[in-house]
Image (cartoon, rainbow, N blue to C red):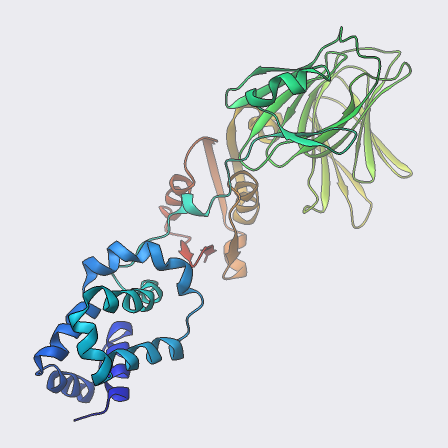
Length: 382
């Protein structure tokens, strides 16, 4: 009879792959013993594995093949084996730890869904001038109103407004942040309305100075500026700024992107960075390169760059690399491209932003030009 070390390796191989003819013969001989057969059936019981797999998932990443083999050898030791068979629960705990790891490759594995990979659910937050941070929610409504900010509603597009007649003398610098998967609007003290996309932030005073209106922004925001020729409205971004009087425009300045985009929907703006500047009219866009410090001016379709404000994803013949980057900002998942070619595939997609991620993945996969799948907790594209 083969020793326990050999048998443990064969059972381990059985779970991972097809056995050789010689291994099948060894296993068959070993299974002629009723006690061995009972133990083997428990090891391969799919219902038991499914019922316990979720509980032991956290351990699976810590186990390697040597650890698993050692566990098998302990179970197959005659002294331990008969005790294990008589004590059913004692068997299953180490077995499920083993099988939890094997679930990654067995046909009855627990499938990780795309929604599980999404990092959404946080609330927008506000940071006060003293550094205090709190969620923007109904729970904190009274505290937030004490500094002159009113929560207008708690729908998908959360809205806040600064009270124009707030009697508090002290002017505070406030920073508002939108988390992954959330949008919101802010009405500033001058009536200017700001739409904030996912993963964005804006810093502004509770009351503007007498000679100008200045804010600091990061991420993607749309400004509908209240006209006031004597008080220019200035948006500061990464090494650049936009100066306007009264207009509608979109800025995009994420830290992980090498460009800063400014797109105008109405009125005119002046985009500037260091010693360069460009005037923009409706339908025009400036693209500032953070690396080269150069500025391009383009004529664009406004909706392509402002559909997010209406709660839409809109990709018009966009590269998959750009699409995945945009989806990550909204859903908060991790992804990798398995090859360079896939990055440059182009797609046209228009969907509401409340659609589950798996529906978008299904849509892209249905073209049969790309294969997107989950491995571990990372989305792979090839």
